Image (cartoon, rainbow, N blue to C red):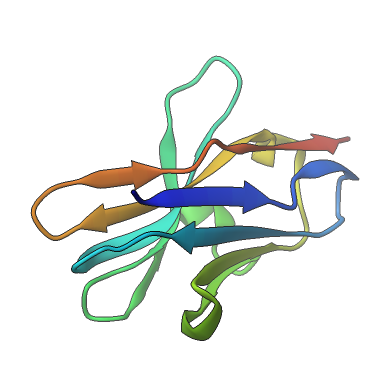
Length: 116
């Protein structure tokens, strides 16, 4: 059974930084994409950043230059470094893996609150 566990969320002042972690366990035969999504209060879940099948990275325009996605394959862990945080970055952040065959895996989410 595949499990994704996020950590690193919390309360931070605007302009501050946080680093989210996503630890993966279980067996996945193949990965099409993996990344981070977020769901702001009262809004739909949206993509923040992801690795594509070819290994390139994609960022939503609103976080370009401020957020960096990375991974440590040896630790089965993915990270999201978030700098220059803004109030509008407040959301529950989820890590995601899209597996070959169509399965989608999600973590339980970690809350990031940015105070202005």
